[in-house]
Length: 162
Image (cartoon, rainbow, N blue to C red; front, side):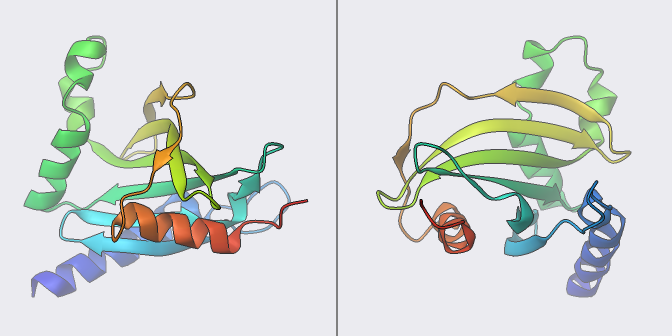
C-alpha cells in the first residue's frame, strides 16, 4: 500500500514539476532517475550537462522530498540552519519545501566533485532561497555512494573534452 502511494506521488510530481515544462528552444528538459527511497528521489537533468573550459563538467540535479515521515525528516535536515541564517523566511514556508535543485561540478578523470549551488523550492514553485558554494574545492567522491552514481551518470552523458 505504501509503495502504491509513493508511486502515485512520484507520478504526480514528475508530471506537474518543472521537469516537464517547455524550454525556450521548444525542447523538453530531460530528467533521469538516479536514486530513490522513502524520503524522496534524486533526478539528473541530462539536458543541462556542460563541460567547462578547464575540462570539468557541471550538472543540475533535483531532490524531491516525498510527503512521508522520512521525506519530512530529510527536508528538516536539509533546512536545519535556514531559520537562523534567514530569519526573514517564515517557518511555514520552510515547511512547504518540496524540492531542491543542486548544481555540482565534476572532474570525471580524478573522480572528484564540488557543490556549486542549491536552490530550495516550495510546493507552489516559489524559489525560497539560493545558496552559493562557488568557492568550494573539488574533493574525492565517496565510493559506492549516491554521489558516485550521480557522477557516473554525469560523466557518461557529458560532452566530449576538446
